[in-house]
Length: 432
RNA sequence: UCCCCGAUAGCUCAAUGGUAGAGCACCCGGCUGUUAACCGGGUUGUUGUAGGUUCGAGCCCUACUCGGGGAGCCA
Image (cartoon, rainbow, N blue to C red; front, side, top):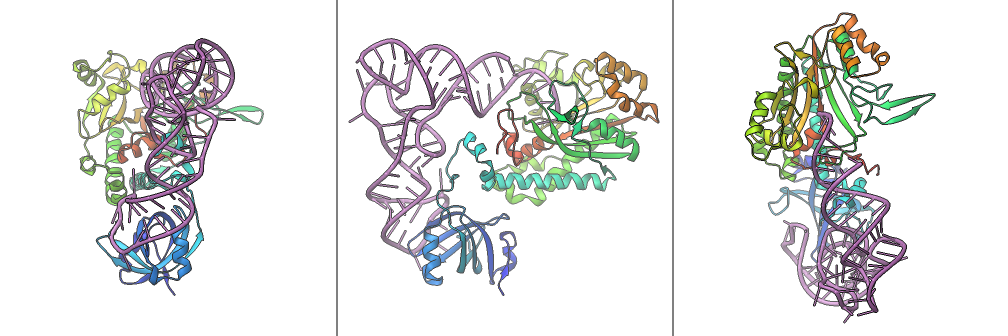
């Protein structure tokens, strides 16, 4: 019986005859010799088919089978320096499951519009394959990081009755006799869970109806939101940098081939070790004030170009903390040392990618929080359950949100977050 | 919501206001070491839509549609 194996395990089978099942990634023919690049999901291997070594029908069929033909090939595994990847299969038998002609995505260039239209097929390309496998490693690393530190994963609801931070960017959906909204953030629910379990995190999809068309925006994206009871701003700043360092280290360890396929400069990733540089808003503002290209005005939030300027000052992500209260959310606690500032932090990824984390210590005083809700003209009734958390055993607590796609795009060195999610949802694209 | 850019063969693109083309894909043939193979031959068009200017529009003008990049806002 011939053993079925996968491309990623070929090194263990050198000198043996195995069966591989997959698809033709590319092929070329030299008369009495076909080279088939076989893709099986775990990698790509070159299969060499000499006319005299295989049944004539198979040789003939392979000559007429294009990209993405599905097939099984049986052959001897050899180490060969001439083959991409270092191994190749000397084919002796095989079976074509479906012969394909005219697969729409060729190894040549395609425009982004066309590729997005064909996303269900584009997933098979080496680039998408590599990015999505990095995404998987990032997710696994995040879960193991929190698990090892005693965090409990809690799931926040996707249907919500109200906004966390205003209603303008919510997707509305009919909900029996009521209107529901798709969640923008699991934070408020994470706060409730933190009071129950101490250290928690949520990990789920979030939805924003922002009419943003930039390389940093999706309408549906995944967010990881840890929340720590008795945690302070300093605690979550340390947590954030340790998390990012852990994730990058795990990707370097587990996905070197994928990073190579993406032509990612791994030397830059190897520098991502804690601690990260920290800047107060005031310090960051001073840097921007001296920078000729910045249009920043003190008191404003940093624009995307400002974030790029700041992040380019360092070879690691930078933590920017204590922003003016006017530009931050109602639930953020003020800094007792400077009441015009919030105990909050944004983490800007390195290499100019911009914000990947936003977090804060939360306001834990009932009266102060109620005042904020009124100041921001938020529907008080809807926040009664949230205020309960300050009525019954309120404690200092803090947390942050990490944008998964922005993190994956940053680690992969890809420009646009739409490539960091299997099926991106953007303002003008709902399909496939 | 605002600003900028684009739409020509299945794909990526070219075409001074004057006969709509190339490469790839696909089909046929050749080649025992290709790396996006190569060589020879072949098929492929309502130039996004609707008007307008002109002897003549892919090209100039207007509107619209679809998409891309960015601003704001955010992860």
